[in-house]
Length: 573
Ligand code: ARG
Image (cartoon, rainbow, N blue to C red; front, side):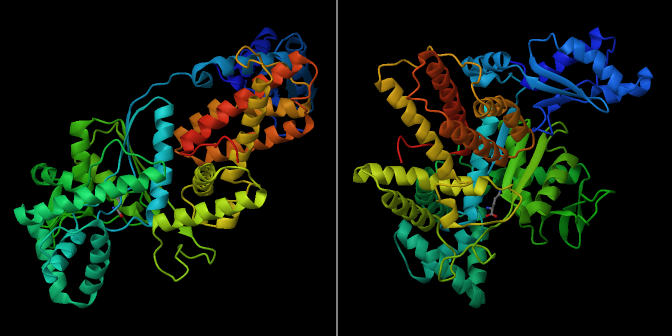
């Protein structure tokens, strides 16, 4: 289905042509003076010079043609040569009706590819904390958007499962003379203790490093413990991500890249890209136009150990082999940007990924507390993800009870959980990913304003109207959207025509925050329309049916959008 602006543009271009002006530059845009008109065309100005005519004269000629068009209800020319347009209500309704009955709201199938979204990146055996929240939330949204627009998409969690933390845990287990395998609870106590100990105890740290080395070089005893830790940690991670409505198609980690490292390094050396520099093996990745210095990408340390860059490069080797992706998108803390610049450049330079493969880095900012510093617990510690979720759940429950509710205990809990997730995710996603933001629990959980709960509240309101309408013995499937009866209704309709273009832009620029901005607009437009329209009390059944069809589409669009953002609306709240 063509986009509305495309259709309007083509129509106006046709009128220009009929008036003798055939030009590719004629387009229609949304008016930047909504007080004067809905759309505008500035084509006459562009043509004036070449036509040796005043723009206003060209506009006048064209306007007589546009006046006969079914697409517009008002056509005016304004000095120096603007053409101001209002869309015809009948045309708008039929366009929206087509959108309502089309698959994916009429989104055209575009050329689609294979996409891997690398997000989450938790470090196994360390508890999930607040730092992992943004990766999970944003990554999940990006993955869902990618799927929706038609890409064959995989989310890969890329666990940090091969590092020093494993050596630290095993060293601590040895110190404690533990014979059996640790439980999850023990693990969550052992790791912080070991990490703390290694800060003051050189010998202990040394031992942990040796164990890490041996583990990475196939020590069976250590591998056995490692496998056990992986099993219980992955089960725990799954549960935690589940609660966030986040899931991964691929559960690989840094350890899976290990077998690819040696042959990759060999090839980099043989091809002449990697060379020894002060003992280390490096690849130059600086480019002429770099504003800031980009240091060489380290491939192996002087002791032969692999680095973070090495595993990421080897993971790309593995991804090429397994999936041959068209794009790999990394959703990681923006402080890691330089790392990814180096990895991407080295990957292209050394031929690990072909030139056509798009490697993107979506670096996100920090989630701060009210004090503007990285979010902490009240006592100043790192907050566990579970704790944060519980606190927000609690707050939402409080608000619901305050508002008065007759829900059963279980319903209440379930609903509060849904609202809490919306509060957290919308609070995060409504900010441009790159920016830092302040986690404000009172603001995020409010049922009013630019918040997740406000969006849900709007959806629940629509659901309730539709329920009552159906309870009155009416069917909703057969209804058609009618031309608007008020300015507010028209505004809502026009906003609804913008879903597909918005989503395509959000995908192209990897910008989930656009979805938030859009649904906030939809919710505001709907509520304005709702307050001025007594839908259920309307005596004209035809009129009422049109409204029901319109709000059905509104709900469908909101549902699709929040699904992409990774949350959902309850039935009541
Ligand atoms: N585990 C890493 C960390 O905690 C994040 C991994 C991000 N993804 C990647 N492919 N490097 O910093």
